[in-house]
Image (cartoon, rainbow, N blue to C red; front, side, top):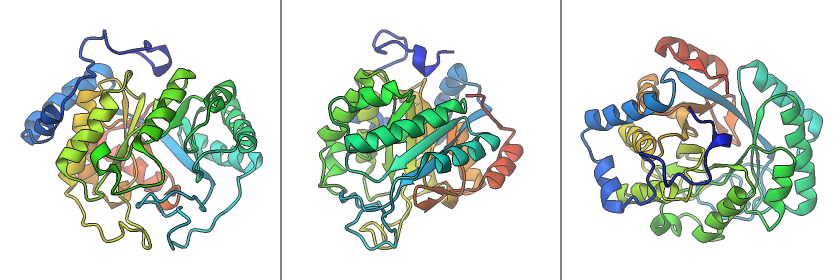
Length: 329
């Protein structure tokens, strides 16, 4: 079983790995009878992974609020009155203590998020120190810092960074309904910079923002049709926050989330598919079907950046009920 760091520079020559999906194909995939969809997804999943292992990751907000972007779902945007106050970057001691707690609770990857449009070089040097502190604990590191300028991905690589998260959020067609302060191409350019620097890519999106099934297909296509599949693919369910433009968006059916997980597993067979934001609103049964559909990574802890997330004790109880165990990496 290949690990992310030993994967080839391209998936193009690998059996079962495609980068030419069409909207028609993926829409049909999402509309398949559920039993057929889940059977294929589970078959592919257990071919590449232990079906009863789930990667545990913890996410810490290292710089809160004050972001100049206008992402309609995000409580950290300075444009919306959400009660989230802008704060400064956390220090090394605070981050190290949080990472030690996460490791003690079983996490193998420690992810750090900062509410920036793009990091300044002086801030990047501070983040590099945080990455080094996490790596000293023997954990994988991941950061999400916004768009990267030339040379910044290389600096992060030099600090030992394992993963960079930069989501596409949705389809190119629906994107303009959610964000106007950066383009879809801006996001793709950052992903290219990360990949070129030799850092593993963490990239996914959000469902439940009012998009159509065709938009969900478009998101999956833009992920799977990258030159190399992202090593991690977080599928987020919108967490509605008072004060954001999407606060009153109608809820989606849990099965829509399950179908997205299954399609992501089929289209990106060797990626870690993360059941990410929105889990706190899902029943145990819905989460169980997501794991069956191929989700094999979760965030756990008290919150995801500034929104709630199931606590570790609840996750351990769920794992016990389902016979799941934390993976060693």
